[in-house]
Length: 285
Ligand code: AMP
Ligand code: FE
Ligand code: FE
Ligand code: ZN
Image (cartoon, rainbow, N blue to C red; front, side, top):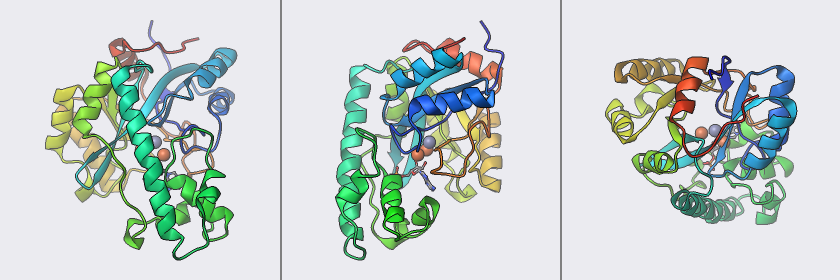
């Protein structure tokens, strides 16, 4: 049955680096009258049960998903995976490995910052939900709590900027392997925020074409963090390559200025996505 409503296909909760628990993100979507949403925490499906319960309770349409961290050379590339089988052995092994590497990396970043500022690993743990996928946002929150930075965004532009020399990458598979992993788990892969960077850094078209060959469904060309030329380029690329465009807010609660429902995906594209999914079921009222 067609969904008949627009979806915000990219949101985060305290299971990764959002500031609200999964159920609260869903309840907020319901209160706003948003037709439907996807919960896509970084490298984790742990928020699905609570989000699902809240979706049933509020009669909100929910597409459980994940935002998989991948890397191509110096580029961090995020791949959204909708309706994957959450117990798929290969997916679980890979996301476990990424989260583990994120943890050791975060500890090293904190050790490095601690040479300049009085910050400890415990300060970061205090900002991180239990079992959450840890990342720079949690270190940013610790810097804010300690009065070293005024807010999360300032911390990213300051202490946590790669130029400051504290940040290093974590383990991540190649994007093409991420796309295959999501498909093999019955999910539908979408390239996250391809236009949210300066045009010269946008993932090259030939690389996106390889991802499409591997099973990529669509490009999230409509994103609040698109740069002017990056966003245009991402839309043009999707048109040339003949893949659908999705729109999402990439909501992180109060951790980012992005507002829930700020961008949405057309119902026809959501329908096409749902038709391809075999790993899990959406909650449809
Ligand atoms: P990491 O994955 O650890 O390198 O951290 C990058 C993540 O920080 C991205 O997924 C962003 O979504 C997230 N993030 C959260 N809040 C902010 C912010 N205020 N500015 C920049 N990035 C942010
Ligand atoms: Fe994030
Ligand atoms: Fe992302
Ligand atoms: Zn995201």
